[in-house]
Length: 216
Image 1: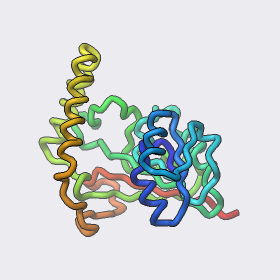
Image 2: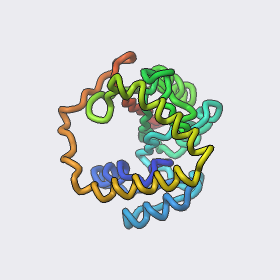
Image 3: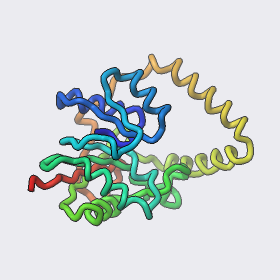
Image 4: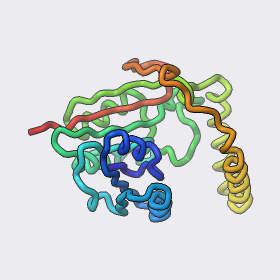
């Protein structure tokens, strides 16, 4: 069961790897329509309460979009869909090394670092929590990005409020160019290009966590 994970690209790969049927729960009907077109056979649900209880539940890059005061309730709701002996897997970006401790991306209203993610999951489930830090391609923050990305995101958000029509057209143009260039993407990085540790204060920006539902 993928919860609010966009069009479920990661969870589709995981479901095929595990030989499982994939369920996707998301509040956005447009996302679910796109998911159904992209991945025939996927079961979709507009309400998490309607989704089944399953061995593996994923919430990838979701928790940072949930306001802090709602995060415990969100995790508890998601955990009710993990069957005994199953696992909840979630991920979030660690933004603490950005200028100001935040990427400046407005939808990220509940960002967490390593200790924050561990504490949230433990408080919400009262179960042991496993957290890992990922570094490597896509999970490394350079000095220019550390400063430039939050400034650019803040500027873009300001422009969206002042000139939504202009920024909408600009975003559409950028998306069209990216789709046209998608054929030029190189091969995926090798597995050994990534480093996975339990380092609380490391530099990798990827955080991955797992909570196992007891069997009894």
